[in-house]
Image (cartoon, rainbow, N blue to C red):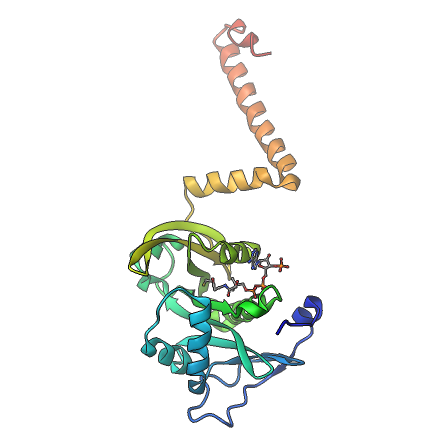
Length: 270
Ligand SMILES: CC(C)(COP(=O)(O)OP(=O)(O)OC[C@H]1O[C@@H](n2cnc3c(N)ncnc32)[C@H](O)[C@@H]1OP(=O)(O)O)[C@@H](O)C(=O)NCCC(=O)NCCS
């Protein structure tokens, strides 16, 4: 069942609506956050009643086994920001995220932000993002992610300085998706996953938001420098700066040699 709407319309012209909870045994987790609706596609929060559908979708999308308690949690626990993309009444995509205090991150994720960050700093973590195979490349994941990022960049969440996730190193579709959405590779995490009785490596990808940034350090500057060099529009500016520094060093060296009375010592550099 391919989606038929043009992506430009799909991405740009949603009207906002509140979740309808009338058929649920348990209420949906949140009701007041604006979600979207356009023709037959809607975004809404997951409810307890969605468990079976969500389970089926996750089994199609992910190679990882999740226990029932996990499905229960993501559909009912308000600590999760769990959104469904619903097409013609069927859940075709979902995103599950949570906001955690930065100080409570696992050791391997601690260097996402500088250690000097205030103790109340928070980060968003994407546990799952999946779209049913029949509906991929139609902007559904982008829409779900946009909604999450809008939520994380509200004034209420201004202490949330980054959003990150783990992804299998072999999952090139997801890697391309996140890179296209300006997430940057943060680290390689060996044996992060245990799938089919085998350990598999993961990557951590990060998007900095609300003024967050990676810890300043030599590596960061080196990476930043290389990235800037690769960008055509900034390379001229960079080269101008480098030239300026070289000229400044050169003049300083000439002055020193001149003061020492041996100008010939530098003349072969001309
Ligand atoms: C990764 C995934 C969520 C993308 O969902 P999607 O709805 O197809 O993504 P979108 O349509 O919003 O894609 C936006 C952009 O991401 C990139 N992208 C998405 N899927 C891609 C793929 N298979 N190959 C290359 N680039 C891809 C493209 O740049 C795409 O834009 P384009 O279609 O204009 O070229 C989907 O492939 C999926 O569910 N995979 C299985 C589950 C998974 O791996 N989840 C991520 C781990 S948390």
